Length: 513
Image (cartoon, rainbow, N blue to C red; front, top):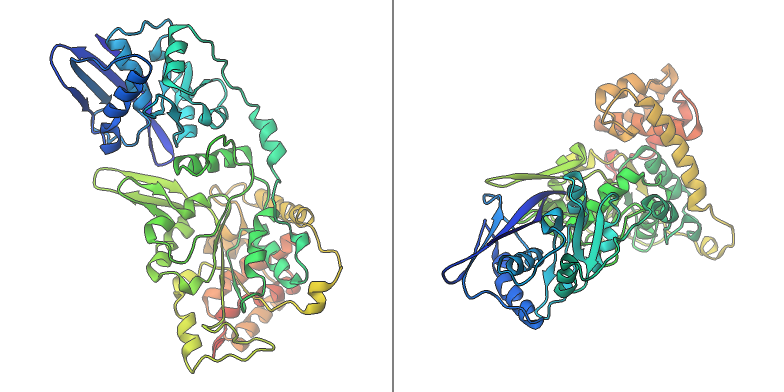
C-alpha cells in the first residue's frame, strides 16, 4: 500500500515542497531514497524507536521511502514525523479520517516519540500557504513562528501519538492564530539600549544620526574605553522602524539559520550583529557544504558591527566588498547556487594604533616609527572606500561622565532620522533599488548633489589643504546631502559641506604620519 504526504526543504531563504512517499511490499529491509544526507538516513532508527514506544511497529517487510524530487539533496532530521506517519498508514496500522495529503508535516522525533523543534519554519509555512495546503503540522515549540502566516492551519503537536490521534480524528487540536500586525506594532521599538544613557560624546551621536538618516557606513577611530562599542549598540534604536515586509524578510533569514529559538515569533526590531574578529570567511558572508546565511545576512535590515576592524582576517574583510555594493550575497556550488539578502549598515571601530593611544589628548603613544601606518594599512583602500563617515572618538571627561545633564532619547533622534528618510523616499521614487542617499551611484550624485560655486570652492580648498583623496569627493557630497535632509533644506549649503568634510579623517594625507 502507498501512503503520501508533504514536507519541505529550505534553499537559501525560500522553501521547496518535498513529496514523501512510503510503500510497504513483499521483501525485507528499509530503503530510503531521494538523495538523503546522513541525518535523513538515520531517521529509520529514530522512527522505529518512537513507534515502539507507543506500541506500534516497524513493518518487517520491504519499506521504501522516497523523497521527491529525487535529484534535490535533502538534509536534516525534520522528515522523521512525515516518514513515521506514512509508514503507519502504508502498513495499515492506522486509519486516518483527515487526509494527510492535505497537510505539510515536519518534525524531528526523539526516541520516546516526543517532537523536537526544527529550523526554517517560516519559509516552509509561507510556501505551504502559497501552494494551497490546508495546514502545517509541526512541533508545538515552532507554532508561534509558523502562525505569523495567516490563512493556514498551524497544528502544534508534542508527540507522534498526538499527531496520530489528530489524523485519526480522535483528538481535536485548535489551529494557533496570531494577529501579526498587532504583535508587530507592540514590539516595534522595544530596544534595551537608548542614547539617553550616554553622557557626552555629542559629536559622535551627531555622526551616527547622520549615518542613520542616510544609510551611511561608519568607522570610529579612538582609544580603548572611549565608548565606541556602547555607541554602536545604540544605533539600531535610532533607525526607522522595520516595515512589516522587512520584518518578515529578517525573520525568514534567522529562521533558516536556526537563530530564532523556541517560542519565537516575528522579529520586530532591527538586528544588531557583532561577530568576533576570529570569524571565518564562510561564517561572515555565508557558506558551507550546504550554504547557510552568514553574519552579513543575519544583519539584513539592521547593523553589522565589526569591533577592532584591523584584527579581522584580511580575506574575511575583502569578501564583504561585493555584498556591500550589491546588498546581497550569492553562494555558488557545482550543481546549484543560493542567494541571501545582505542589506545592512556597516559600523566599524578601531584603535588608532596597536597600543591604542595615538593622538590621545593625555596618554603618549609608545608605538615605534612606521607601526601606525602599517596598522592602518591592514584595512584595504577598496573597503575603506565603501565607508562614508570616519569619526574620531575621544575619551569622555570626568565632568561629563558624572554630570546630570539630560541627554536626548533615541526616540527624539529617530524622529529626525525618519523625517530625513521620508524626503529621500520622495526623491528616489523614480529610481528603483535606491532607498537612501548612501545607495546613490556616482552619476546620480552629480544630478542630485548640486552645490553652489562657493561650496565648490570650499570643497576644492579642503581637498588641497587636507590632502583628501579623490574617492572622498562623492562621499562628501552624499553625506552633505543627508545633512541637508536633516536640516530640512532642498539645497546643500556651505555649512553642510563643511560638516561633511570633517568626517573624512582617514582620507587625509599623513593622518598617521
